[in-house]
Length: 586
Image 1: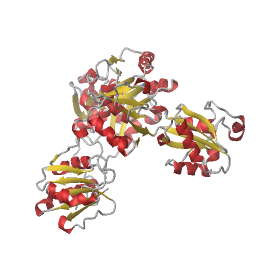
Image 2: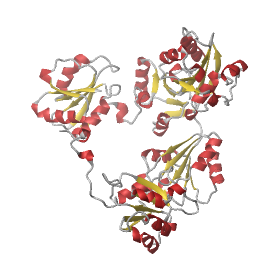
Image 3: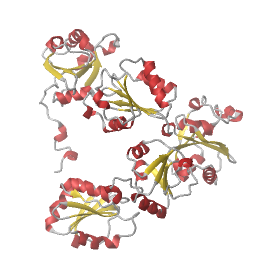
Image 4: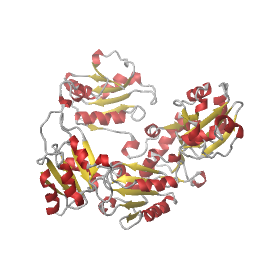
């Protein structure tokens, strides 16, 4: 994105140069030397000078908000950054915030939806990857009514980050309805995030999320003429928007058919996804064909490839037959509204170290099931009213799953809250096996691991240039045996920074194995309950590690760190050398 900075006075030259140094593809021009044309590819204008001069200087460029460049005016003292033109569509509002951050000024945003915390209907689709399906006139009318508080019904037929955001930021005058039949009689505007076409009698704005997978089968060298029109017409006839197609797939036998490329081009799709027959043959399809089975080895190419591409999602259009081809459409399973389980990494313990995404899930959850013996209950204090908060400390795996499934089957959001990062000694594999077995929707939000909290608490960089470039996360051998190739004595030969979990109870054996490779004077740290209120950290040398743990009665919530990286201040990173221009300017 190219930016033209127009400077009026010499007093604004320094501000212009500071902005130019921070923004890529930027050209600075004195106003009196400007030819009043936009450089090729230029999308932004930053005007440094008085607002009135700015308006008079760019008014000849004004066309309409869908094509105008974004214009931001910065006063020559650098106090304010004011969007002048194309605040939403062109991005001038966001650019003003960026520029204000660079110069230490204040963005002056006058757009009503921004100032009242309302959705920007003309850009929200672009933000979440949806296609806005409304004429400019309809969109403008909808925006006018929406920002003035007209009674609005919201239909969310898919589940993604965008619809989660809309639920979380729902304005007071908007009501979520499950389907068209529930739209209240006094509704003045309908906003629908859906692949489906509805007959709605009040003004409506549609956003088409790309959630549909189209499977295609065809005869050899199938003619391409008219096929896209046939498919598009069939979709519309069945109340499905072609704008929601996100991919096309078929069987390997058909990968070189010209029809595939033609359809991808016509529907603006990326290259087709190709499945081997082995991956499709066990998929049950509603319209199997013995003939297709004989030729391809699968019961139905179009239906099975659509289902596979949609990760097991249901068919919204079963097999349709054209002259020499078939097609079917499935909705992506991860986008279908309903129950969902989010496995959230709580971080090492401090409630402020959970990720922003994790916090949002905790605030939205209908059930929070947290690992009570390892996760502080304070992390759940942000739960909404009515949320059920339970500790899993006294539950069996089957009891945990039963509780989660109870809420899941009621189309609710479940948060399974694990300590640290759930993918590191998080015991989530067994739970995911249950979820997979029952075809449940789930996702993992990573968390800060205790080894990262240890590095911060120790004020140490766990890698040292030209000396230590590897961090090993492991544990000592307890009730669960270690693979022979991962014995501590073998891992220690690398002299890496080693972070040893779950091993305070076997510290004598840990110390003995480490001493086979590390010098006795190697720095160590025993970190107990990192970031908790009762955090304790003990430093020492490897030869004294077991004594440190025993003397201070440290338990399983202790992370042991070993290596020369602890407290090291030697070694110069080449990232700040003269050859790395990306970190500084000459």
